[in-house]
Length: 276
Image (cartoon, rainbow, N blue to C red; front, side, top):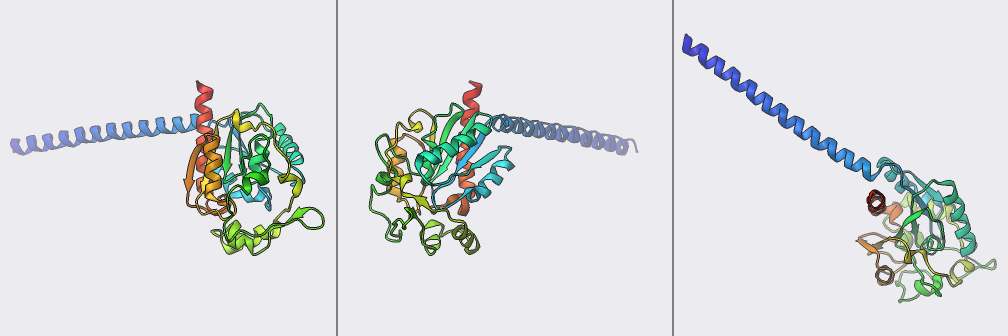
């Protein structure tokens, strides 16, 4: 009887010890999770904001999925409304949005807007993110870099109308602009498209801001509007942090997760730099 009681006591003690060890392991795991959460919080502490500039034939709504993805990570974003009437007008419109947002700011531009984000002189801007964007250097025009290499066979022939505005043919939204988007998304993109004026792409730019700020470049391997060769030329020339992904010309709609990721990389790096 005594042996039985001793065995029961030993078993009870073993269970208690195991439970204590398990609780300790759980505590350690919880502590590690808390540290990871604190590290993430420091990376996305709400201090760094994001301003997004849309490209030709689009408007601010094209960034809606990216805005939601950034918000889910605690990063607030604004989409600057560009008139697409001239490069100077678009830079001025971007500056008006930047004036409304407390810095520091990571500035992201899609396609044509790569030239726009490089035209601001706002001291709030801490980094530039190019999303399959055009990056003319000083003395070049947007058209110079757009046509630097042979266009994709699927790319539409572009010409201004009687008002000096260039529209994208409706079928081009499915063929080249956003072929990986859903049919419904392409219908919306075509319906809300904003034409771009010749004055946006024919003016030589001054010293681009990418020469003076950290920069990132998302290269879309399946882009039929701006060739991969053109994107790599620009990204390598500016010595950008390059992220190459399998995406079409409008990944902010068709592959928003990869766009969110590269912007968050820029936000993290700015947070690190700010902490020294």
